[in-house]
Length: 112
Image 1 (cartoon, helix red, strand yellow):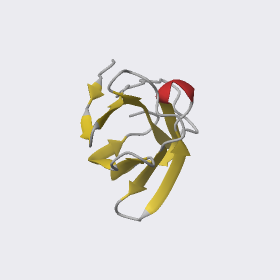
Image 2 (tube, one colour):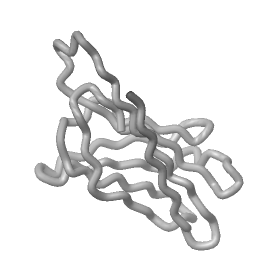
Image 3 (cartoon, helix red, strand yellow):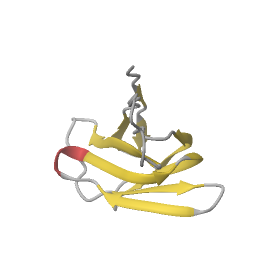
């Protein structure tokens, strides 16, 4: 089963598209899997990746922070996140307005 969720935000005069795919991976042998993850893209309005942008996911109940940088092509990946939530994912980059998405939940063995 696969579900996709995306969102777009205006960042001042430049627009970043923060797109996250919600992929449900049904695995019969989920033994040993204790985490999930968040993957997505940070793009300009023209579709160019914002390489070097900071992406931080905060597990709100505990305050645990997970961070990464946007790679070539605009992709980012935050694997091995604590299951549950809610998480707030924040993207920031010098010259752009900081943008956040709240209320993200991570399920066992899934990537949001």
